[in-house]
Length: 246
Image (cartoon, rainbow, N blue to C red):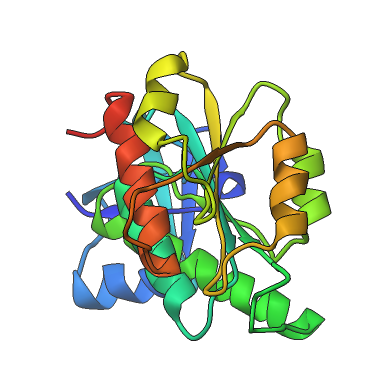
């Protein structure tokens, strides 16, 4: 059955309103009509079975028939704090991590990030990145669309982390503590923050600030992973270890 995401505010009582590009897709491409069934998702994990009531040029009105929590979403909420990389690497990271089950992505303006964005570009990129997450969620049939926040600074991110979250940072200078033994010692948390640096890595000041906040530094072995590889790779390891993949 065709599935369509809407904003939570577009669902009221037993009605949902579909807007944007999905209107043309439903009416012109799929050639659906009033009375046809479809699935509506609010992007926060609730899935509605619905039927089309009315098709207009700018919106489609649906009647909600039933609702349930979406299956397959990880119980462990992993937030990826990703140092801003060059080019379109961020889009690839968002796409792959969305497919794997990330809960939230926070782009980090790291000191070694080559790309510098002004306020206008920050807003434009965030909107673009959120669309990438939405399309990836559609493609892999997730019921939750990961929130992609605007580019943030180090201090703001560390300040807002919940006190009971588990913090992990792969770092090329760490030689003694590996990821697997660390996870084996830890009870499964409800939230986990994963810190990945940009191409040049994180500097000593950033690493020290994270360590003082309670972040665990780990080595991933002898091979150095690219920034666009590290996030999806460690996310996979974490979710697999806690039984959320495989």
